[in-house]
Amino acid sequence: MGARIIDVIEDSIGAEVGIEPGDTLLSINGLPVMDILDYQFYSQDDQLILEIEKPNGELWSIDIEKDYDEELGLLFEGVVFDRIRVCRNLCVFCFIDQLPPAMRKTLYVKDDDYRYSFMFGNFVTLTNLTEDDWSKLERMRLSPLYVSVHTTSGELRQQMMGNPQAAHIKEHLKRLQKAGIEVHTQIVLCPGLNDGQELVNTVNDLANLYPSVQSVGIVPVGLTGYREKLPQLRLVAPEEARQLIDQVNQWQNSFRAQFGIGFVYLADEFYVKAGIPVPPDEYYDDYSQIENGIGLIRLFMDDWQEIKRDLPNQIDPVQVFLITGESARSVMQTVAEDFNQIKGLCVEVITVPNQYFGGGVTVTGLLTGTDIINYLQDNYRGKKVVIPEVLLQEGSTMLLDNITLEEIASRTGVVIRTTDGSARSLVEAVLY
Image 1: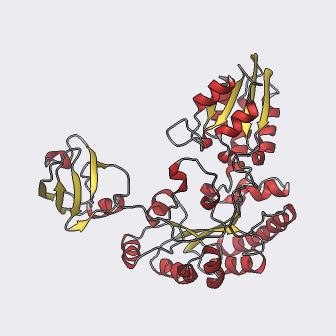
Image 2: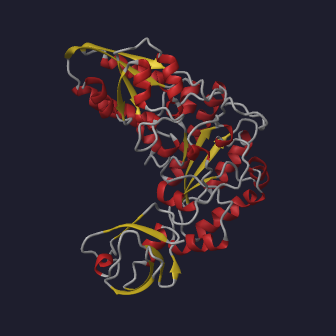
Image 3: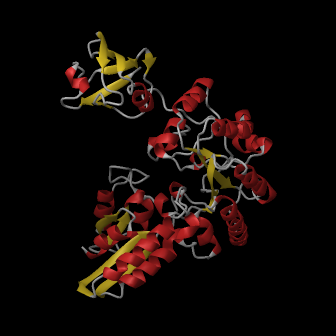
């Protein structure tokens, strides 16, 4: 298959030896190049033999002498050149299995690729690794990795994930430890399955692997209205969230004494569910679980406290509406109250219920164009509406249900501004 080259940096080694856009890199020193990691790892040597396939099918063998670590100057299409590793599990809580129909096709792809874990922080289960994969992990020391553990009980993990390979999680984590690979772990908490004593056992087992296991992120199971023929699960109740917060606070006190870090961190949704303010900055240490939604509210609120000091006292009269999901309503309401201290500015929060997904989905990032259009209708025509970019496909204006910002503006008559989720971007979207 090889790696298709889309560009060659001018005056680079690759350009000097005649490599051109449209060529395909097949191997380096006889080793196949399956992803960008192979390319970066193999191309470090000072003596290289590149096998290149030209667009007409002609094969070139190119000998290169260079300084160690000197770049070849080749740019590729994508980062994985073979097929992405897909999930082989049948998890009882799988969110993709409960997606509504007619959304973007890519949303239904179950990625479980250890290379994406290393490069982008995606959580993987380690259940589909071949021995060659393990060898590559260990040889390249791909660290850190992000691993979905859920439970360290082999029997329960196999049951929850519907895959016999899931039972070997302790062996897999110990193998990563032996290879010197650090791991950030995730637990999707399903009430009645992996909570209670099972959760205590899992956290203790993971703590025994510190410092190889660097952190444990606990997130609540997400349930939509599309769970027909799927196992029965339920959401975490407010009282359960409060009890879990108390438990994690105790764990953090203990682990800070042992490790110097909190080690276990709760997703923001638990605090929203419990009606308890999110913890202070020091709770999150280095925010290693930020991609899991753990600490996002705290980061935003701390930034907001800094930025709001520089807000103007008065502006020309304007009314602005902030789109948000139900889980972020209280945070955005606080922000709106601060904005409204500015004379001439009126900011209101529009909390859009997620009817497209249904179930218990309340996060802002899963709002769809359909939900926004149905809520706004013709009631905000000519008004300025701020929509967070987390709703959008990266690099486009399209939401999850293939509706674009342009279509929302056309059908509702609103004037749309977007924000990247930072406090500074929100100020710019509201005031300018």
